[in-house]
Length: 93
Image (cartoon, rainbow, N blue to C red):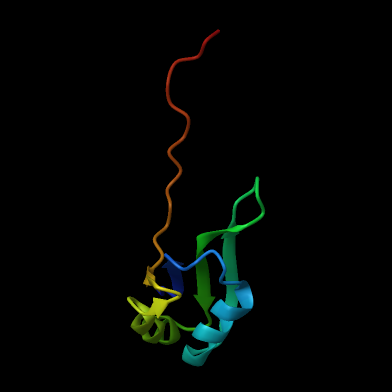
């Protein structure tokens, strides 16, 4: 299975999408960059998902793990699929 999607976290809330794109575009073509935003405040939550066009580009971009950005060490790793947990429990009715 090809894995070309990265989780990028622990960056300062002041970092915007263009800064992330500039940081990671050196590793290869970015197909999608999804910066996760707080729905109530509209501000970034400090993490994003970046999908590269190739697995090789994503693997090279792992070099950014631990890089200091604004006094914070980036966390960069391969994104894992989140499985739906369903809504267990008993019905009230």
